[in-house]
Length: 244
Ligand code: GLP
Image (tube, rainbow, N blue to C red; front, side, top):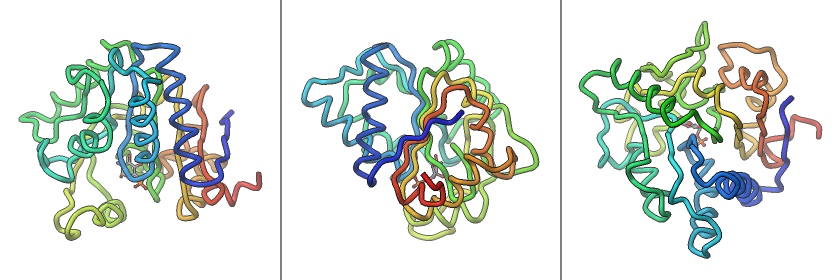
């Protein structure tokens, strides 16, 4: 059963999500967190930074694993997810840099990188709390719609609509990488708890489909219906077709 937390607006969604994440870290200081990029979680990261500065949260024992990275972008590329995480979160909190993991977008051997990434997560004991956003086509991480759910961490060929949506961060569509490394559904579904964040009217239809539609690999987020501890934290606009 998906739990739903209805927030008033983006700010309220961000605070509620930050509250859940901070409770996780207070209850288990050495939590393994699965983290997401995209514009949706930025407000949550801002709130966590604020509470960290006030002395309310200590991240010193936390480990983090990000969902994905663009293939071909190195750490310093302004649109790499590594850079995004440094700028929006890691630079401003006390997570030990040795405990921060993001797939390497410029690996020599991508198969090896994918296997190693999974192994590191397993060695850390699996993910305690996974934060997810949702793409307009229902993708989570970069698990794009396709004929089957991709279990393992893998290289994804990004869909045109995903590249187009993300081109707002790049100069032009041509600059958006065509491939990405993404955590697979197996690891995401093994996370002990998941929070899925969504804000705004533009996410309403896909969110509704994911929460109540048939479980379908063409709507990747729909598999989350099978997770034993998933909480959707969404604002009124994203939940408008929900009827609650
Ligand atoms: C990207 C990321 C996803 C994210 C999605 C939605 O494609 N790989 O993890 O959920 O964008 O982004 P936004 O939150 O900006 O709508």
